[in-house]
Structure formats: structure tokens, C-alpha cells
Image (tube, rainbow, N blue to C red):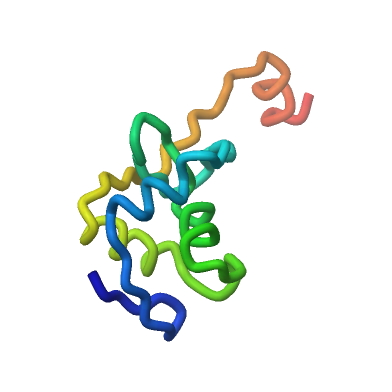
Length: 95
């Protein structure tokens, strides 16, 4: 499938993306992620590996669209749940 990422055309094939990511250890997921095989990778890490470009050159949206069109499942960032701390309530009152 032909797609444009960071103004450069790429011909991507799902099996080639899977093969490229097979030996790569996933980084901790902090934003949008994609399932490749049985692993969960950050979208930006996958983009960097398959395009060989810096992560600053493309956006999460570009990579998400390309990976979704290839048939991969992308996941939104998980919402951060605040942890309750007893001292937090004291600080809020200023005591």
C-alpha cells in the first residue's frame, strides 16, 4: 500500500512491517499504540523503524492512519488516573 509519511511516499506491506518489528523490544507506551503480533508498540517507535526517519519528522496521526490502513489495530492513550495521597488533601487546604 502506498502512503505518504512526512511528505515522502512509502510502499508498505503488512508482513514487511511485522518482520521489521519482530526483533525490536517495545518501549513503554505513553501515547497512541499499535498491536503488532502479540506486542504493543508506541506508534512513533514503529514509524521510526519502518521509515528510518526521526520521530520529529512525522506525526502520530500520519502513522496511525497508515498502520490502520494496513490492517493493524491502533489504541488511544490510556487516561492517567491520579493516585490518592493523604498529604494531597492537606496541601489543598493550605494547612
